[in-house]
Amino acid sequence: MLQNIAIGQYVPGHSFLHRADPRSKLLFIILFATLVFLANNALTYAVLIAFTLYAGLLSRLSLGYILKSLKPVWILIVFTIVLHIFMTKGGTVYFQWGWFTVEERGVQQAIFISFRLGLLVIISSLLTLTTSPIDLTEGLERLLGPFARIGVPVHDIALMMSIAIRFIPTLMEETDKIIKAQTARGANFTSGSLIKRAQNLIPIAIPLFVSAFRRAEDLALAMEARGYRGGVGRTRLHKLAFSWRDAGMAVAGVLLAITIGWWRA
Amino acid sequence: MQITFDQVSHVYGKGTPFERIALHDISFMIPSGSFVGIIGQTGSGKSTLIQHLNGLLLPSAGKITLGDTVITAKQRLPHEQRRDIGLVFQYPEHQLFEETVAKDVAFGPSNFELPEAMVDARVREALEIVGLDYEKVKDRSPFHMSGGQMRRVALAGVLAMQPKVLVLDEPTAGLDPEGRNLILEAIYRIHQEQKLTTLLVTHSMEEAARYADYMLVLAQGKVALQGKPDEVFMQAERLRELAMDVPETVAFVSRLNQMLPDKEGLPNSVYREEELIAHLLERLSVPKEG
Ligand SMILES: Nc1ncnc2c1ncn2[C@@H]1O[C@H](COP(=O)(O)OP(=O)(O)O)[C@@H](O)[C@H]1O
Ligand SMILES: [Mg+2]
Image (tube, rainbow over all chains, first blue to last red):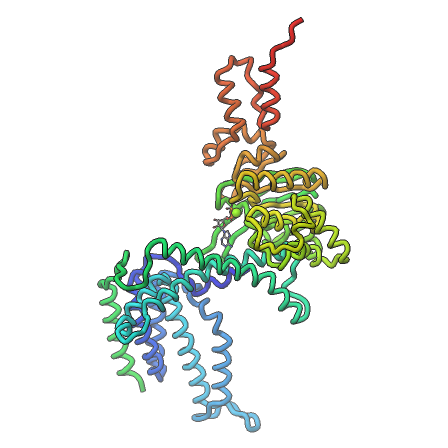
């Protein structure tokens, strides 16, 4: 029932993107997002699209599966297109009907902005598809490390994030099971008035809370039993290390930035 | 209710990198009133198989027939018929949610819009079947009971719907021997009294041997063996290949037969504990003189 939400989930693998350091991937995305906002003509967009396709190839995931990550935002994209076509004015008038016009700049903006959204979504899905949640939070923790000096509890935030991410699939599975079990007892979640449907959530919500609390308690106990005392003095099993892949990404980033800067209007 | 699976397959996550064939070309026929033991290692597809029985999962291919109702990839089970198939999930106590035991057990029957008096009667009856005293437990919170009691409350919650087919997914997992026996005996009693068709998923050969009159052995999503228990247990070699043991009774008989001269061996088809004991007593009793 909830299987469709696998989108955006980590797919284990050994591709270039999988093995690159999460820190460089995060930094690269920040750079890429900036460049997407700087792009303002067909040429620069073409460069970014070509680059994104190439990055997709580097992940060795099927293109269809990567494009599926657009599913949750397609309404937003369509909405943006419609809004720009109808509201943005300027340039040649393509179509006129009373006060209502479709003009050149509107069409252009519609295309650019929808590509902008699409590129951002795809490149960030490439990050989550090729980086395990553990690596991702560790990368974040390390990047934000300097803020710990000014009193930001970076380690605790990272730990909370990784625990939350770790338990999302577990809780989904659990929800799925509970829904099935209550359905087997005749519960009907899809029909009836709004109030009735809200009441129908109780048989799902209560067992879910009970099990979430039980899990949290177990986890806290297990961590304490193994001597967890917070981040101070903690060493790591897997140390993040930069490699030639990260150097490659840095070079690609610089080249991309120069190209966009040169060719933008 | 007669249950037929005709070349049923099930694929999880079709079209994603997580695609997984959980059931492959499963076919079998269970006559009405049987007690079927479904055995297999973790991940062999037992839970997937039984969720097809009340339409929680639809087959990706193939056809299931329940009595007169047909389920296929495109043909769902009508809501009212869910009540005929009582499905008890693994760790069913995790699904309890009401303030009191009586209310929780009443959840199933109330969903099928029975009159209140009838629901009450069914709740009382279901709790007695699982060996809980209605007057004592009805107002207690299910969350304050022991694990074994909670599981029996959850079982009562399914029995109160008075299904014609009872399907249980590892009902004894994680219980102590006493809790295990209480649950299994309750299940067997109601199976006989109400002439149910019962499917018991387990990975204990002992449990299957004790109650089942038909067995399905699953391995990697396929039916590896099926038949009457004695037929299945005869294939000790094949079971070992599947990393499963024959029940201790069967192992005992074969070891005993190795030590006895050929003609005096016990029949290989003996696998029920009581039967074995009867045979042994007969052999051991000294014939009366005269
Ligand atoms: N909801 C699900 N989504 C994807 N795969 C699943 C799901 N449930 C089970 N599976 C997979 O299907 C196979 C059979 O699982 P299951 O039916 O639970 O086996 P069993 O009950 O015999 O342990 C396993 O490999 C399992 O990983
Ligand atoms: Mg199972």
